[in-house]
Structure formats: structure tokens, C-alpha cells
Length: 368
Ligand code: ADP
Ligand code: MG
Image (tube, rainbow, N blue to C red):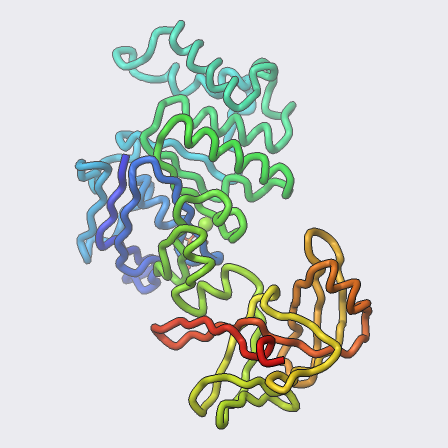
């Protein structure tokens, strides 16, 4: 089921003084898995609840919500054919896993209700999909958090919703279980071919799981794109910083040289103040400066865990620490240690004006 939102806004509080959502438009394709990503308070839950019909959008401007061709703006949540999964497992504690999953089907009006044989078949199929058939007779208290969320998923899918809405569904679980459940969700989504909207404040989760990500801040949509396009071409400074670690290089450009304390970098930019941003993997380290880059730093921490080594750097001219990720080979070549004095070499940096983002490959390494 495709979803079309048009001019949807939401204000709370006396006289509607607090804006939770600025008027926004959003189109979601049939079968898409969309991630709503943003910091706490950015309006993700509000938007999800409006799609669900749990919350009404403002009357002015008069927005519209379409599911396929159907205008559902005034339609009750019960009639929208939606499945929900929330962070806190709202399983019925006095019912077995099987009964939890079957519940929605067994309470349907008799005329719509599938036969008891069909209900049994459907529940078993779902339990099989989330690999919980063996635990069908258990009670929620006898399951781990991850298993409980799998029951929630199965239960929300029992009514064959057109749209599945998930609000930080894995937020309360530990990292490894979250990873596993992401794969579950992606798998179920692809196999059953519904449309999903998934709320998270975790960039990694959104980028890994979604077909497209909607980045939100302050009740606004900052960017809608595929994970790859978001990371490669962030629309603005907010998106760049929210998607990963960012180092700042703030200073004054004069005659093609950016200066910041005793640090300097050749840049092909007009005179004036600049605040350049660099990802940790865009910072190389060496024992000597270059003609085009003189950025002295001291190593303050080293974490050689994972595919790359994370190196924390400090310097007088830096407002805060910098993070560089280097290959293990470079880590060994430089015999990195805490307290070591080195020189940072930007491979690439980014700069954002109000509307025109730009990435620059640095001359520092080429001209070395
Ligand atoms: P998120 O899910 O991104 O953390 P929310 O949609 O929950 O953000 O909230 C967006 C803004 O709306 C926040 O400033 C929040 O305080 C406010 N808000 C959300 N729900 C209510 C409510 N029922 N009454 C008043 N303000 C609310
Ligand atoms: Mg929320």
C-alpha cells in the first residue's frame, strides 16, 4: 500500500503554541521500508501516530493522508489496516505465545473471522517465520526480550496489515539482539510484501535497514534519500553531522590558506571565516607536516578494535578532540602510542553553505 502525506502539520499545547511538525509532504511507495531518523523530540513518533490515525493532524492547514487511492484522513485507526510494534512489548502476560499471536484474529467479528483451522494454520506459519514454533506454549515472562519482540512482530502481522508501523521497536534490546531482529524485520518485510515505516534515532540501524531514510529535525524533514545517497551527498550540515562522527576545522581563510592557531591548511576558498567538516576516515596521520598542510596533533587515545584503529587526537588549535580512523597497517607503520606528536592530513573535507553542500578532495596529500 502506498502512502501519501500532504501538508501534514501538528501543534500541541494551549492555543497550539508548540510546533511538533511543520507542514510536510511525504510519499512512500508500495512495498518500501522507510526509516524515520532523527534526534529525540524531532517529531518521528508524532508523524508515525498521525499515519496510524492515533493522532489527528492540525485542521489548518487541512492536510490529507492517502493509502493507495483512498483518503484515510478521517478514518479511524481500526479501519486503516495497520500493524504496530512498539519499544515496550505490550504482550498479554496471561496468554501463551500462540494465543498472543492468535488474539487479533479470534476477536474479529464472526463474519470476517477466518475459520479456526485457518487461524491455527496462519499462527503456526507466523511462528515458523519468526522461529518460535517450539515456544508456542510459553508465556511472555519465560521469553528473552528479543523473543518477545519477535512475538510482537508475529502478532502485528497476523491480521495481514497493508502497513506496518514500528516505533523504536528494538530500542530496549542489546546490540547483538538488535542486529538479529533487524535482519528478521527486513526478511519478513520482503517476504510478506507490506509497506513499513520504522522509527529510530540510531543512524546505523536506519542506514542498514531502510530502502529510504527520512531524516528529521525539529519537526521538519531535512532529507529523504537512499542510505547510500544520504551518506554520499548529505543535503546540509545537520544531516552530515547526524549521520556519523564529524571533525571540525574552524578558522579564517586568507589568500587561499585557512589558519587556526598554529595550524594551517591550503584551501581553494575565498577569504573569510570557514567551518570545514571531516569524517574520521578522511583524516590521515603522518610524522611530518606537508607544504600544504600543517596540522600538529597529539594522540590522546587509541582503540585498535575492529576493522580499523580509532585514534583520538587533541591540539591547542582544536575546539574539541578529533577522531581519525586508520588502517591497522598504518597503525603499525607509525607505531602509534598515546602522547605521540603527529600531523593530521585531511584527505577530503566538506563545507556547507545554507543551500549548497560541497565536498573537496584535499590537495594536502597530493601535493605532499
Ligand atoms: P520523537 O519521537 O522524534 O522523539 P515526538 O514526536 O515524540 O518526537 O515529539 C515531537 C515534539 O512534540 C516534542 O517536542 C514533544 O515534546 C512534543 N509532543 C509529543 N507528544 C506530545 C503531546 N502529547 N503533548 C504535548 N507535546 C507533545
Ligand atoms: Mg519517539
